[in-house]
Length: 195
Image (tube, rainbow, N blue to C red):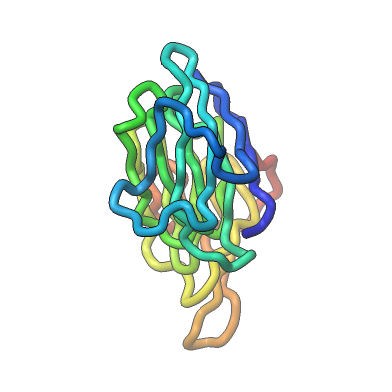
């Protein structure tokens, strides 16, 4: 597992710390994500979460892939009560005010994640497509953009630009996505400021 990322772009009603290992003495409140995981402690992401209005809890996130290229870390979400944790490419959204409430984000593996405050979105890129997570959960998911590997290259206004490898032509192809809808758009490249 590579060194965990921490991105606190959005304001939050919690603080958290990534623990180097599972504590020997477990806190009173502890939650495992997902609930049905087998051998979850093995290489899991262990996070001590301190919500503003409730007692702290230990969150244990099951590892997706042990591949070093798989993303691992913590992100604040557009909703200040929620956190996003990624463990070896498996992403989880957890309501820190009610930790029983969570969602394992269907996009697997997550290879990169960007916070876009202007759009109030977390944008998760995987091998084939991009998924956006907003204040009410999943906002949109793109069509298949790549046969293997999506790279976000630029954010310009409401447009996300990137490249993906196409199996048929055996080359990288460019794409542009409307950040409001997730729809693919045709765009003439223009200089501009990114987010």
